[in-house]
Image (cartoon, rainbow, N blue to C red; front, top):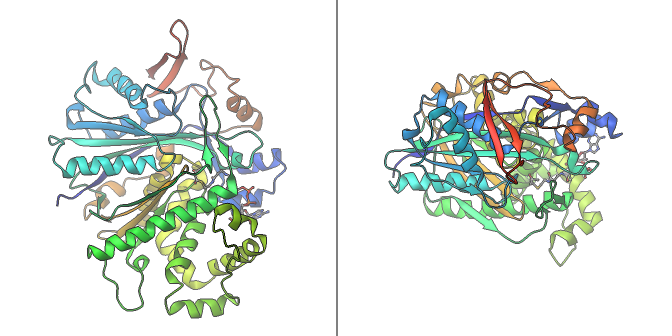
Length: 463
Ligand code: CAA
């Protein structure tokens, strides 16, 4: 089978951020809760002349320019988002319109593509579909671009407000990719009707059941992981030695990151599930000094588990001690830690957070001097509502060509720390489009919404 996967990644992060210390002071929160409890240090915030469509176009233009690609090299542009700006017109059509300001009217008219929606997991479905479009040789020798772009914006004063963020990534999906080739026939999905997080029509912020969403995430990802295990063992992709589990054969992990700490918690949850029946568990339990708690709840629903406060408190304590064991720490440092760096300074990117985590992991593992060629990366993607996807890929021998020039700080660019008052004005849309906090150069910006044509959005490339 053809090797297909991610050849390159470009990012766009808005030039404004809210610092956790300013935010904590304004909301009378202990800053340690944000920094250590959630792993949030800075949250990227969009300016008044920005939206998910222009961030997507900016990430895509950077990808095209960096790789010297012509429109004729590209056959599909997919855009995954949960920050839709129109109920009908797909966001990738806005992106095409912006790109054609640079490449010429009609230059992308041969392309296909859609806007995909399933909360944060939709970017992974878009990548999966485009990978298979190339494997099936439907692509006429062209590559696909998958863009993930979102503004994670929550109700002011809610607990979601400290897990905001914004940005876009554009990923080049092609044959013989320089970064990673996806493993065929092991991608695993689960789905169920959940109301953990949703945004009814016309609402600008979602309705969130925070603690419920955390547990829904963990359970769905674990279920997808179990399906991945079945497929990877049955297909022979992974062969277990004595007393081993599938995670022993995954060298790096990238998980959906609504906030950095969620990644740490997800790794702990998965490891506990995997290790419970292995001989190493006995030693771990003796280090933890307590038995793993079991819920007495018989219903087995997320609500009933959360309502079992005695179990929840004991489990929290057990998990805390588990995360202090050398066994967990070793897995965390080797497989996940570097992926959390970007999240802690950008915040939640919804569809993009998994891929920003992967991008972060590549750069910072490379900077540690670790040879990544041939390593297997496990991806765990979650979208509220709810669906999870677990899949894997192997880092290409040529990865250094791309990764050695990755520099998160440079690619984010110079940013301005917002005052809380400025942030509130932006959050409430009190600042008009033509009065942005920062004037932008060499990027697409929004210049008008509505006017004589209702809902019509106009963008220009600002020189
Ligand atoms: N110092 C250090 N740590 C502290 C602390 C302090 N002073 N105070 C609290 N903490 C710790 C807590 O112990 C807890 O740690 P654990 O994760 O180890 O248990 C952590 O800080 C968070 O504290 P709370 O659980 O009390 O936080 P909260 O209830 O106020 O809010 C949240 C957390 C529910 C995630 C909320 O921010 C939220 O609703 N966010 C939006 C929804 C979300 O992100 N859900 C994630 C799963 S769904 C998903 O992933 C899809 C998506 O993108 C939205």
